[in-house]
Amino acid sequence: MTGAELITNYFRLLSDEQVNRYEMMGPLYREWNARINVISRKDIDNIYPNHILHSLAIAKYLQFSPGTEVLDFGCGGGFPSIPLAVMFPEVKFHLVDRVGKKLTVAADVAAQLGLDNVTTQHGDIAEVKGCFDFVVSRAVMRLDAMIPLLRRLIAKPQRNALPNGIITLKGGDLTDETKRLSCEIEEQPISDFFAEPYFAEKKIVYVPIIK
Image 1 (cartoon, helix red, strand yellow):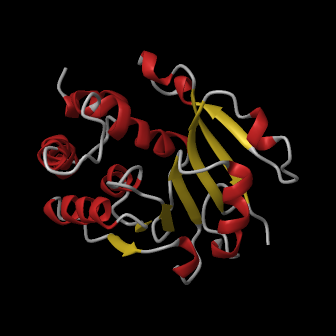
Image 2 (cartoon, one colour; image 1 turned 60 degrees about the vertical axis):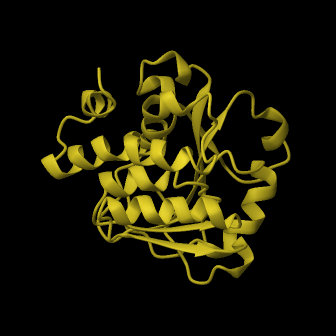
Image 3 (cartoon, one colour; image 1 turned 45 degrees about the horizontal axis):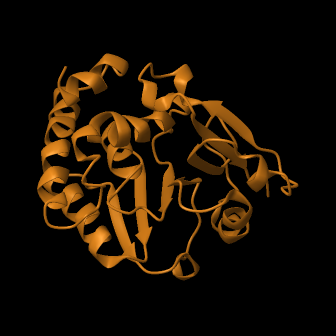
């Protein structure tokens, strides 16, 4: 099964353009990774299940409404937002990272895929202005440290099936980083969506931010 076939196995209503973009995505990251170590050299052969499909677990959890604005906190080379931007062409994704060379990769991949719904910002999260419906991230930092940093960036008006908030991809036991939280959280096993062994202990953590 090719990488794109892995994606279409779980997302069957993709357009030809979306399928083509997913087919291009793996080789683009492989080419960049030969120059800049965005993904572990040992893991680049698993880019489709471990990175692209992993990112798309968020699309199984929530179908973003058109016009939704999403901030990707600590995007690295563009995960989870680049795969999500292909899935949701009518959603705006703003990618932020302090590591310029990784952001360069994300920006170039987005450009080569023709994604006009992706913008990037090099810098610290404290420099980000504006409000977003959701902030997404992929194992950037502990939840108890992340939530206070991101709360101010969550917009008040609602336009999705879930209240605005934070959606992060995590793995393993989260008891230590959630035990001090006073806010509500929801943990969703990704193995409910995808059958690959990689997802056995992976989960989506959703934190609604009510203002």
